[in-house]
Length: 502
Ligand code: AHR
Image (cartoon, rainbow, N blue to C red):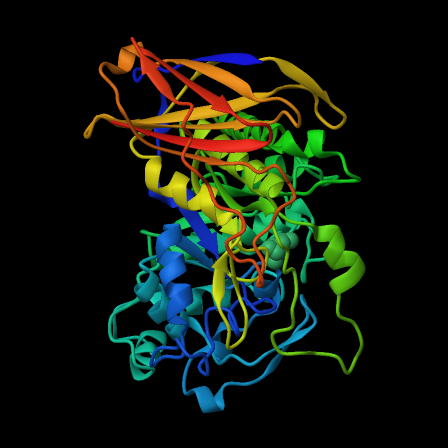
Protein backbone atom coordinates (compact mmCIF):
# COMPACT_ATOMS: atom_id res chain seq x y z
CA UNK A 1 0.00 0.00 0.00
CA UNK A 2 1.17 3.53 -0.71
CA UNK A 3 0.16 7.05 0.26
CA UNK A 4 1.33 10.51 -0.80
CA UNK A 5 1.87 13.60 1.27
CA UNK A 6 2.89 17.13 0.28
CA UNK A 7 4.50 19.45 2.77
CA UNK A 8 4.83 23.18 2.09
CA UNK A 9 6.06 25.52 4.83
CA UNK A 10 3.90 28.33 3.40
CA UNK A 11 0.68 26.54 4.29
CA UNK A 12 0.63 27.13 8.00
CA UNK A 13 -2.34 26.23 10.19
CA UNK A 14 -1.11 28.09 13.25
CA UNK A 15 1.69 28.41 15.75
CA UNK A 16 2.26 25.34 17.90
CA UNK A 17 1.68 26.70 21.40
CA UNK A 18 3.71 25.09 24.18
CA UNK A 19 0.44 24.94 26.10
CA UNK A 20 -0.66 22.17 23.73
CA UNK A 21 1.63 19.83 25.67
CA UNK A 22 -0.04 20.30 29.02
CA UNK A 23 -0.85 17.66 31.61
CA UNK A 24 -3.40 17.15 34.35
CA UNK A 25 -2.92 16.12 37.98
CA UNK A 26 -6.10 15.28 39.86
CA UNK A 27 -6.38 14.23 43.48
CA UNK A 28 -7.56 10.81 42.40
CA UNK A 29 -6.38 7.31 43.32
CA UNK A 30 -2.58 7.03 43.53
CA UNK A 31 -1.88 10.08 41.44
CA UNK A 32 -0.70 12.50 44.13
CA UNK A 33 -0.23 10.16 47.10
CA UNK A 34 2.02 7.18 46.19
CA UNK A 35 2.48 8.72 42.74
CA UNK A 36 4.26 12.04 42.76
CA UNK A 37 4.44 12.20 46.59
CA UNK A 38 5.81 9.31 48.64
CA UNK A 39 7.96 10.54 51.55
CA UNK A 40 9.17 7.01 52.41
CA UNK A 41 10.38 6.23 48.91
CA UNK A 42 14.15 5.68 48.44
CA UNK A 43 14.26 8.50 45.85
CA UNK A 44 12.09 10.94 47.86
CA UNK A 45 13.53 14.44 48.17
CA UNK A 46 13.35 16.64 51.28
CA UNK A 47 9.75 17.58 50.37
CA UNK A 48 8.65 13.96 50.02
CA UNK A 49 8.45 14.02 46.22
CA UNK A 50 9.76 11.06 44.24
CA UNK A 51 12.85 12.14 42.29
CA UNK A 52 12.42 9.28 39.80
CA UNK A 53 8.95 10.59 38.91
CA UNK A 54 10.21 14.18 38.67
CA UNK A 55 12.85 13.01 36.21
CA UNK A 56 10.28 11.21 34.04
CA UNK A 57 7.87 14.16 34.05
CA UNK A 58 10.73 16.40 32.90
CA UNK A 59 11.59 13.93 30.15
CA UNK A 60 7.94 13.85 29.09
CA UNK A 61 8.07 17.60 28.41
CA UNK A 62 4.86 18.85 30.01
CA UNK A 63 4.12 22.58 29.80
CA UNK A 64 1.07 23.57 31.88
CA UNK A 65 -0.48 21.24 34.45
CA UNK A 66 -4.18 21.46 35.28
CA UNK A 67 -4.93 20.95 38.99
CA UNK A 68 -6.54 19.70 41.31
CA UNK A 69 -9.36 18.10 39.24
CA UNK A 70 -11.41 16.85 37.41
CA UNK A 71 -14.47 15.60 39.19
CA UNK A 72 -12.57 16.05 42.46
CA UNK A 73 -12.62 19.86 42.18
CA UNK A 74 -16.42 20.03 42.24
CA UNK A 75 -16.42 19.15 45.96
CA UNK A 76 -13.06 20.66 46.90
CA UNK A 77 -12.55 23.35 49.55
CA UNK A 78 -9.24 24.91 48.59
CA UNK A 79 -8.76 26.40 52.09
CA UNK A 80 -8.41 22.83 53.43
CA UNK A 81 -5.24 22.39 51.41
CA UNK A 82 -3.24 25.38 52.70
CA UNK A 83 -1.82 26.34 56.10
CA UNK A 84 -0.07 24.15 58.70
CA UNK A 85 -0.27 20.54 57.57
CA UNK A 86 -1.11 19.18 61.00
CA UNK A 87 -4.25 21.31 61.06
CA UNK A 88 -5.52 20.38 57.62
CA UNK A 89 -8.79 18.42 57.72
CA UNK A 90 -9.34 15.01 56.23
CA UNK A 91 -12.32 15.18 53.90
CA UNK A 92 -14.50 12.80 51.98
CA UNK A 93 -13.95 13.00 48.25
CA UNK A 94 -17.41 12.21 46.91
CA UNK A 95 -16.30 12.06 43.28
CA UNK A 96 -13.99 9.09 43.78
CA UNK A 97 -15.38 7.75 47.09
CA UNK A 98 -12.01 8.26 48.79
CA UNK A 99 -10.49 10.18 51.71
CA UNK A 100 -8.50 13.31 50.92
CA UNK A 101 -5.87 13.96 53.59
CA UNK A 102 -4.85 17.37 52.20
CA UNK A 103 -1.23 16.54 52.94
CA UNK A 104 -0.40 17.89 49.50
CA UNK A 105 -2.10 21.18 48.65
CA UNK A 106 -1.54 24.29 46.60
CA UNK A 107 1.86 25.23 48.08
CA UNK A 108 3.28 21.73 47.91
CA UNK A 109 2.00 21.19 44.39
CA UNK A 110 3.49 24.46 43.23
CA UNK A 111 6.83 23.45 44.77
CA UNK A 112 6.63 20.20 42.77
CA UNK A 113 5.86 22.16 39.60
CA UNK A 114 9.06 24.15 40.06
CA UNK A 115 10.96 20.86 40.18
CA UNK A 116 9.38 19.48 37.01
CA UNK A 117 9.53 22.82 35.20
CA UNK A 118 5.79 23.17 34.46
CA UNK A 119 3.25 25.96 34.96
CA UNK A 120 0.13 25.81 37.09
CA UNK A 121 -3.39 25.88 35.65
CA UNK A 122 -6.04 25.98 38.38
CA UNK A 123 -9.65 24.85 38.34
CA UNK A 124 -12.20 26.48 40.65
CA UNK A 125 -15.08 24.61 42.24
CA UNK A 126 -18.36 25.62 40.61
CA UNK A 127 -20.05 22.42 41.74
CA UNK A 128 -20.66 22.85 45.46
CA UNK A 129 -19.31 26.42 45.57
CA UNK A 130 -19.53 29.67 43.63
CA UNK A 131 -18.16 33.09 42.73
CA UNK A 132 -17.14 34.15 46.21
CA UNK A 133 -14.89 31.14 46.85
CA UNK A 134 -13.37 31.45 43.37
CA UNK A 135 -12.51 35.07 44.16
CA UNK A 136 -10.97 34.04 47.48
CA UNK A 137 -8.71 31.55 45.75
CA UNK A 138 -7.76 34.03 43.03
CA UNK A 139 -6.93 36.66 45.66
CA UNK A 140 -4.87 34.09 47.58
CA UNK A 141 -3.01 33.02 44.44
CA UNK A 142 -2.49 36.26 42.51
CA UNK A 143 -2.65 39.37 44.74
CA UNK A 144 0.91 40.32 45.80
CA UNK A 145 0.21 41.64 49.32
CA UNK A 146 -1.91 43.73 51.64
CA UNK A 147 -5.24 41.85 51.63
CA UNK A 148 -6.57 39.16 53.93
CA UNK A 149 -6.01 36.29 51.51
CA UNK A 150 -2.67 37.56 50.19
CA UNK A 151 -1.36 37.98 53.72
CA UNK A 152 -2.64 34.52 54.61
CA UNK A 153 -0.61 33.13 51.71
CA UNK A 154 2.45 34.97 52.95
CA UNK A 155 1.95 33.59 56.47
CA UNK A 156 1.75 30.16 54.87
CA UNK A 157 5.25 30.63 53.55
CA UNK A 158 4.82 32.06 50.09
CA UNK A 159 5.84 35.71 49.73
CA UNK A 160 5.45 36.02 45.98
CA UNK A 161 2.04 35.38 44.41
CA UNK A 162 1.58 32.15 42.49
CA UNK A 163 0.58 34.36 39.51
CA UNK A 164 -1.65 31.73 37.91
CA UNK A 165 -2.74 32.72 34.42
CA UNK A 166 -4.95 29.81 33.26
CA UNK A 167 -8.18 29.11 35.17
CA UNK A 168 -10.94 26.57 34.54
CA UNK A 169 -14.45 27.64 35.52
CA UNK A 170 -15.45 24.31 37.08
CA UNK A 171 -15.32 20.87 35.53
CA UNK A 172 -17.69 18.88 33.29
CA UNK A 173 -20.76 20.70 34.55
CA UNK A 174 -22.86 19.01 31.83
CA UNK A 175 -22.27 15.57 33.36
CA UNK A 176 -25.01 14.11 35.62
CA UNK A 177 -22.19 12.49 37.67
CA UNK A 178 -20.74 15.91 38.52
CA UNK A 179 -21.35 17.35 41.98
CA UNK A 180 -23.48 20.44 41.34
CA UNK A 181 -24.34 19.39 37.79
CA UNK A 182 -26.45 22.12 36.17
CA UNK A 183 -28.34 22.90 33.01
CA UNK A 184 -26.41 24.80 30.33
CA UNK A 185 -28.43 27.90 31.12
CA UNK A 186 -27.76 27.77 34.87
CA UNK A 187 -24.08 26.96 34.42
CA UNK A 188 -23.67 29.61 31.71
CA UNK A 189 -25.03 32.30 34.06
CA UNK A 190 -22.86 31.17 36.97
CA UNK A 191 -19.76 30.93 34.77
CA UNK A 192 -20.38 34.41 33.31
CA UNK A 193 -20.84 35.97 36.78
CA UNK A 194 -17.73 34.25 38.08
CA UNK A 195 -15.65 35.11 35.01
CA UNK A 196 -16.57 38.80 35.23
CA UNK A 197 -15.77 38.93 38.92
CA UNK A 198 -12.44 37.13 38.43
CA UNK A 199 -11.43 39.54 35.71
CA UNK A 200 -12.33 42.50 37.93
CA UNK A 201 -9.89 41.11 40.47
CA UNK A 202 -7.18 40.19 37.97
CA UNK A 203 -7.66 41.19 34.31
CA UNK A 204 -4.64 39.12 33.27
CA UNK A 205 -6.33 35.76 33.84
CA UNK A 206 -7.22 33.49 30.93
CA UNK A 207 -10.52 31.70 31.53
CA UNK A 208 -11.75 28.33 30.29
CA UNK A 209 -15.49 27.72 30.37
CA UNK A 210 -16.75 24.12 30.48
CA UNK A 211 -17.76 22.63 27.17
CA UNK A 212 -19.21 19.13 26.96
CA UNK A 213 -17.69 16.12 28.73
CA UNK A 214 -17.65 14.41 25.36
CA UNK A 215 -19.00 14.88 21.86
CA UNK A 216 -21.43 12.06 22.64
CA UNK A 217 -23.29 13.74 25.49
CA UNK A 218 -27.01 14.18 24.72
CA UNK A 219 -26.65 17.94 25.22
CA UNK A 220 -23.52 18.29 23.03
CA UNK A 221 -23.65 21.28 20.70
CA UNK A 222 -26.59 22.94 22.37
CA UNK A 223 -24.57 23.01 25.62
CA UNK A 224 -21.72 24.88 23.89
CA UNK A 225 -24.12 27.30 22.19
CA UNK A 226 -25.99 28.16 25.39
CA UNK A 227 -22.94 28.40 27.62
CA UNK A 228 -21.06 30.59 25.15
CA UNK A 229 -24.09 32.80 24.62
CA UNK A 230 -23.81 33.66 28.32
CA UNK A 231 -20.02 33.85 28.55
CA UNK A 232 -18.69 34.88 25.12
CA UNK A 233 -17.33 38.27 26.15
CA UNK A 234 -15.88 37.05 29.43
CA UNK A 235 -13.91 33.89 28.59
CA UNK A 236 -10.99 32.96 26.34
CA UNK A 237 -11.46 29.23 25.87
CA UNK A 238 -14.11 26.56 25.85
CA UNK A 239 -13.02 23.11 27.02
CA UNK A 240 -13.26 19.81 25.17
CA UNK A 241 -12.87 16.42 26.86
CA UNK A 242 -12.50 13.13 24.97
CA UNK A 243 -11.48 9.62 25.95
CA UNK A 244 -11.25 6.67 23.60
CA UNK A 245 -11.11 2.91 24.14
CA UNK A 246 -11.34 -0.24 22.08
CA UNK A 247 -14.88 -1.61 22.22
CA UNK A 248 -15.71 -5.28 21.70
CA UNK A 249 -12.46 -6.09 19.91
CA UNK A 250 -13.14 -3.53 17.15
CA UNK A 251 -9.51 -2.47 16.68
CA UNK A 252 -10.19 -0.95 13.24
CA UNK A 253 -12.64 1.60 14.69
CA UNK A 254 -10.46 2.25 17.72
CA UNK A 255 -7.53 3.09 15.44
CA UNK A 256 -9.74 5.72 13.76
CA UNK A 257 -10.50 7.52 17.06
CA UNK A 258 -8.73 10.68 15.90
CA UNK A 259 -11.34 11.04 13.16
CA UNK A 260 -13.84 11.54 15.97
CA UNK A 261 -11.53 14.04 17.68
CA UNK A 262 -11.15 16.00 14.41
CA UNK A 263 -14.94 16.20 14.04
CA UNK A 264 -15.36 17.14 17.70
CA UNK A 265 -12.91 20.04 17.42
CA UNK A 266 -14.36 21.27 14.15
CA UNK A 267 -17.93 21.15 15.52
CA UNK A 268 -17.02 23.10 18.66
CA UNK A 269 -15.14 25.70 16.60
CA UNK A 270 -18.19 26.04 14.30
CA UNK A 271 -20.52 26.41 17.29
CA UNK A 272 -18.29 29.02 18.96
CA UNK A 273 -18.02 30.95 15.69
CA UNK A 274 -21.80 30.76 15.28
CA UNK A 275 -22.28 32.39 18.68
CA UNK A 276 -19.70 35.02 17.72
CA UNK A 277 -21.50 35.67 14.42
CA UNK A 278 -24.87 36.09 16.12
CA UNK A 279 -23.29 38.61 18.49
CA UNK A 280 -21.52 40.41 15.65
CA UNK A 281 -18.28 39.85 17.54
CA UNK A 282 -14.85 39.70 15.93
CA UNK A 283 -13.49 37.89 18.99
CA UNK A 284 -12.61 34.19 18.57
CA UNK A 285 -12.97 31.64 21.34
CA UNK A 286 -10.20 29.02 21.34
CA UNK A 287 -10.38 25.43 22.53
CA UNK A 288 -8.62 24.21 25.63
CA UNK A 289 -8.69 20.43 25.09
CA UNK A 290 -8.19 19.99 28.77
CA UNK A 291 -8.85 16.25 29.07
CA UNK A 292 -7.84 13.79 26.36
CA UNK A 293 -6.48 10.25 26.39
CA UNK A 294 -7.18 6.59 25.87
CA UNK A 295 -9.20 5.45 28.91
CA UNK A 296 -10.89 2.08 29.45
CA UNK A 297 -13.61 3.79 31.49
CA UNK A 298 -15.92 0.78 31.29
CA UNK A 299 -13.35 -1.06 33.45
CA UNK A 300 -13.75 1.61 36.14
CA UNK A 301 -17.54 1.48 36.01
CA UNK A 302 -17.68 -2.32 36.17
CA UNK A 303 -14.69 -3.35 38.28
CA UNK A 304 -12.90 -0.62 40.23
CA UNK A 305 -15.71 1.54 41.57
CA UNK A 306 -15.68 1.95 45.38
CA UNK A 307 -18.97 1.98 47.28
CA UNK A 308 -20.22 1.72 50.88
CA UNK A 309 -20.66 4.10 53.83
CA UNK A 310 -17.58 2.71 55.63
CA UNK A 311 -15.37 2.45 52.56
CA UNK A 312 -13.40 5.70 51.96
CA UNK A 313 -9.81 4.62 51.27
CA UNK A 314 -6.82 6.94 50.98
CA UNK A 315 -5.15 6.73 47.57
CA UNK A 316 -6.79 3.52 46.30
CA UNK A 317 -5.73 1.96 43.01
CA UNK A 318 -8.14 3.59 40.58
CA UNK A 319 -8.10 4.05 36.80
CA UNK A 320 -4.69 2.36 36.52
CA UNK A 321 -4.99 1.49 32.86
CA UNK A 322 -2.04 -0.36 31.35
CA UNK A 323 -1.49 0.81 27.79
CA UNK A 324 -0.65 -1.29 24.75
CA UNK A 325 1.13 -0.45 21.51
CA UNK A 326 -2.28 -0.01 19.82
CA UNK A 327 -3.31 2.40 22.59
CA UNK A 328 -0.12 4.41 22.02
CA UNK A 329 -0.74 4.55 18.27
CA UNK A 330 -4.22 5.97 18.87
CA UNK A 331 -2.75 8.32 21.48
CA UNK A 332 -0.12 9.57 19.02
CA UNK A 333 -2.88 10.08 16.46
CA UNK A 334 -4.85 12.18 18.98
CA UNK A 335 -1.78 14.42 19.25
CA UNK A 336 -1.72 14.66 15.44
CA UNK A 337 -5.35 15.78 15.59
CA UNK A 338 -4.52 18.50 18.16
CA UNK A 339 -1.65 19.75 15.99
CA UNK A 340 -3.80 19.76 12.84
CA UNK A 341 -6.06 22.25 14.63
CA UNK A 342 -3.30 24.37 16.14
CA UNK A 343 -5.03 27.55 14.96
CA UNK A 344 -7.91 27.04 17.41
CA UNK A 345 -6.71 24.40 19.87
CA UNK A 346 -4.18 26.49 21.71
CA UNK A 347 -4.20 24.70 25.05
CA UNK A 348 -4.52 21.01 25.94
CA UNK A 349 -3.97 18.76 28.94
CA UNK A 350 -3.25 15.07 28.72
CA UNK A 351 -5.43 13.38 31.35
CA UNK A 352 -3.59 12.34 33.40
CA UNK A 353 0.11 12.11 34.39
CA UNK A 354 1.05 9.51 37.03
CA UNK A 355 -0.66 6.15 37.81
CA UNK A 356 -4.17 7.38 36.90
CA UNK A 357 -4.71 6.78 33.14
CA UNK A 358 -1.13 7.91 32.93
CA UNK A 359 2.03 7.77 30.82
CA UNK A 360 4.06 7.22 34.02
CA UNK A 361 3.47 4.38 36.49
CA UNK A 362 4.94 3.83 39.95
CA UNK A 363 5.03 1.11 42.55
CA UNK A 364 5.15 2.10 46.26
CA UNK A 365 8.78 1.71 47.44
CA UNK A 366 9.48 0.42 43.93
CA UNK A 367 10.31 1.69 40.46
CA UNK A 368 8.69 4.22 38.15
CA UNK A 369 8.38 3.39 34.45
CA UNK A 370 7.17 4.66 31.10
CA UNK A 371 3.91 3.36 29.65
CA UNK A 372 3.68 2.98 25.86
CA UNK A 373 1.86 6.32 25.62
CA UNK A 374 4.84 8.10 27.17
CA UNK A 375 6.77 7.92 23.92
CA UNK A 376 4.44 9.70 21.48
CA UNK A 377 3.87 12.45 24.03
CA UNK A 378 7.55 13.02 24.81
CA UNK A 379 8.60 12.92 21.15
CA UNK A 380 5.79 15.16 19.89
CA UNK A 381 6.37 17.65 22.70
CA UNK A 382 10.08 17.82 21.83
CA UNK A 383 9.86 17.75 18.02
CA UNK A 384 6.73 19.81 17.21
CA UNK A 385 8.13 23.35 17.02
CA UNK A 386 7.21 26.48 15.12
CA UNK A 387 4.08 26.22 12.98
CA UNK A 388 1.77 23.31 12.26
CA UNK A 389 1.39 22.81 8.50
CA UNK A 390 -1.62 21.91 6.45
CA UNK A 391 -0.76 18.80 4.44
CA UNK A 392 -2.10 17.43 1.22
CA UNK A 393 -2.64 13.74 1.96
CA UNK A 394 -3.73 11.04 -0.48
CA UNK A 395 -4.14 7.71 1.26
CA UNK A 396 -6.23 4.58 0.71
CA UNK A 397 -9.30 4.29 2.93
CA UNK A 398 -10.81 1.47 4.99
CA UNK A 399 -14.24 0.87 6.45
CA UNK A 400 -14.61 1.29 10.18
CA UNK A 401 -17.83 0.28 11.92
CA UNK A 402 -17.91 3.44 14.05
CA UNK A 403 -16.66 6.16 11.74
CA UNK A 404 -17.35 4.87 8.23
CA UNK A 405 -14.68 5.12 5.56
CA UNK A 406 -11.49 6.67 6.95
CA UNK A 407 -7.94 7.14 5.63
CA UNK A 408 -5.42 4.42 6.50
CA UNK A 409 -2.80 7.08 7.15
CA UNK A 410 -3.03 10.27 9.16
CA UNK A 411 -0.24 12.83 9.42
CA UNK A 412 0.79 16.34 10.37
CA UNK A 413 4.01 18.29 9.95
CA UNK A 414 5.56 21.21 11.79
CA UNK A 415 8.17 23.68 10.59
CA UNK A 416 10.24 26.13 12.57
CA UNK A 417 11.28 28.96 10.25
CA UNK A 418 13.69 30.36 12.85
CA UNK A 419 15.82 27.20 12.94
CA UNK A 420 14.91 25.66 9.59
CA UNK A 421 14.00 22.39 11.34
CA UNK A 422 10.88 20.37 10.74
CA UNK A 423 9.02 17.30 11.94
CA UNK A 424 6.52 14.88 10.46
CA UNK A 425 4.20 12.70 12.55
CA UNK A 426 2.39 9.79 10.92
CA UNK A 427 0.20 6.83 11.82
CA UNK A 428 -0.65 3.72 9.88
CA UNK A 429 -4.09 2.50 10.96
CA UNK A 430 -3.96 -0.71 8.94
CA UNK A 431 -4.10 -3.80 11.14
CA UNK A 432 -2.52 -5.92 8.38
CA UNK A 433 -0.39 -4.02 5.89
CA UNK A 434 2.59 -1.72 5.93
CA UNK A 435 2.09 1.55 4.04
CA UNK A 436 4.89 3.32 2.18
CA UNK A 437 4.39 7.08 2.25
CA UNK A 438 6.04 9.33 -0.35
CA UNK A 439 6.40 12.82 1.10
CA UNK A 440 7.00 15.72 -1.27
CA UNK A 441 9.40 17.95 0.67
CA UNK A 442 10.83 19.86 -2.30
CA UNK A 443 9.58 23.20 -0.97
CA UNK A 444 11.57 22.69 2.24
CA UNK A 445 14.84 22.97 0.27
CA UNK A 446 17.80 20.73 1.14
CA UNK A 447 16.65 18.50 3.98
CA UNK A 448 18.38 15.79 5.99
CA UNK A 449 16.89 13.29 8.39
CA UNK A 450 18.05 14.03 11.93
CA UNK A 451 16.10 11.34 13.75
CA UNK A 452 13.32 8.82 13.24
CA UNK A 453 11.17 6.96 15.75
CA UNK A 454 8.57 4.29 15.05
CA UNK A 455 6.38 2.66 17.67
CA UNK A 456 5.10 -0.73 16.46
CA UNK A 457 5.22 -4.35 17.55
CA UNK A 458 4.35 -7.78 16.22
CA UNK A 459 2.05 -7.95 19.27
CA UNK A 460 -0.08 -4.79 19.09
CA UNK A 461 -1.26 -5.50 22.64
CA UNK A 462 2.28 -5.58 24.10
CA UNK A 463 2.60 -3.38 27.20
CA UNK A 464 5.17 -2.11 29.68
CA UNK A 465 4.53 -3.49 33.15
CA UNK A 466 6.21 -3.70 36.55
CA UNK A 467 7.79 -7.01 35.58
CA UNK A 468 8.70 -5.91 32.03
CA UNK A 469 8.96 -2.09 32.19
CA UNK A 470 10.92 -1.78 28.94
CA UNK A 471 9.10 -4.32 26.79
CA UNK A 472 7.89 -1.58 24.38
CA UNK A 473 9.90 1.37 23.10
CA UNK A 474 10.13 3.23 19.78
CA UNK A 475 12.93 2.27 17.38
CA UNK A 476 14.57 4.22 14.61
CA UNK A 477 12.94 3.68 11.23
CA UNK A 478 15.58 2.43 8.79
CA UNK A 479 13.30 2.65 5.76
CA UNK A 480 13.56 6.45 5.44
CA UNK A 481 15.15 7.69 2.19
CA UNK A 482 15.45 11.25 0.90
CA UNK A 483 16.06 11.53 -2.82
CA UNK A 484 15.62 14.71 -4.85
CA UNK A 485 12.99 16.44 -2.77
CA UNK A 486 11.08 13.29 -1.89
CA UNK A 487 11.17 11.47 1.41
CA UNK A 488 9.85 7.93 1.56
CA UNK A 489 9.09 6.05 4.74
CA UNK A 490 7.47 2.69 5.35
CA UNK A 491 5.04 2.55 8.25
CA UNK A 492 4.44 -0.90 9.76
CA UNK A 493 0.84 -1.93 10.48
CA UNK A 494 -0.62 -0.28 13.64
CA UNK A 495 2.25 2.15 14.05
CA UNK A 496 3.08 5.74 15.01
CA UNK A 497 6.14 7.48 13.56
CA UNK A 498 7.95 10.77 14.18
CA UNK A 499 10.65 12.14 11.87
CA UNK A 500 12.92 15.05 12.78
CA UNK A 501 14.29 16.99 9.79
CA UNK A 502 17.15 19.48 9.51
O1 AHR B 1 -9.76 12.05 34.17
C1 AHR B 1 -10.68 11.32 34.90
C2 AHR B 1 -12.03 12.03 34.99
O2 AHR B 1 -12.59 12.11 33.72
C3 AHR B 1 -12.01 13.47 35.45
O3 AHR B 1 -12.02 13.61 36.83
C4 AHR B 1 -13.29 13.99 34.88
O4 AHR B 1 -13.24 15.37 34.62
C5 AHR B 1 -13.51 13.16 33.65
O5 AHR B 1 -14.80 12.63 33.61
